[in-house]
Image 1 (cartoon, rainbow, N blue to C red):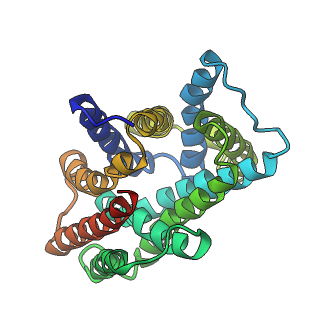
Image 2: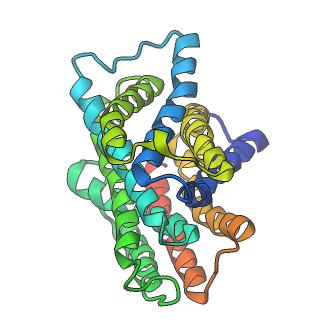
Length: 295
């Protein structure tokens, strides 16, 4: 891995903006589409740039190899379930709250890593980070202006979606020796296969007359926030490594909150700001502990 240059920091910022922009685009997509349809269109359009890259780089896609069950399982847990849960939750929760709730993924992965991996055990710094980060989330749930009895469950479902990402990440360790592009392409194929019957029986999207902004948003979610973002993530990982790429975690909730205000004029309360700071500080301590372990 080489020392990060200005271009690397620029690419990291672009990746954070792309992932952060997903939240307000999900909100716009819910104006016309149901959560199953949003999940299906995300994986369908997201698969296009990834599979094209694999084709031009002559990378073999192993979706139907002997490891197909791992690809299918990860496709469901890492794509189908969280995409559905987030879209369902964002329909009645502000998208900036979703950005903050989803930013707990590094904290949740640290907790899960302690129990399911050998080299990711808690230490004092990590424990402090986890406590600060999740305290911010608990504090966010006390914001009665934005989370009440009508959307409390929706907020919990978004948190569950972030947990699905973490579980999917742990399962991906089972096939970690395979190329990232192959793994991503294979799980996108299986996610699409799983969602075709679900979207056909549950929502029948071909009967919809969607708004133009919703249509643009859902295509953007697939092509850019799913497909191109994953490819950009690969580039950063290969060039600069996991520690550098993980810094995107700080930027996503910040950018997500700013973008939701710019495009949707969503309310930013005092408790939202405190929760945002607490989550970012918590992530900082967890990442600091990981960084110290590598030097």
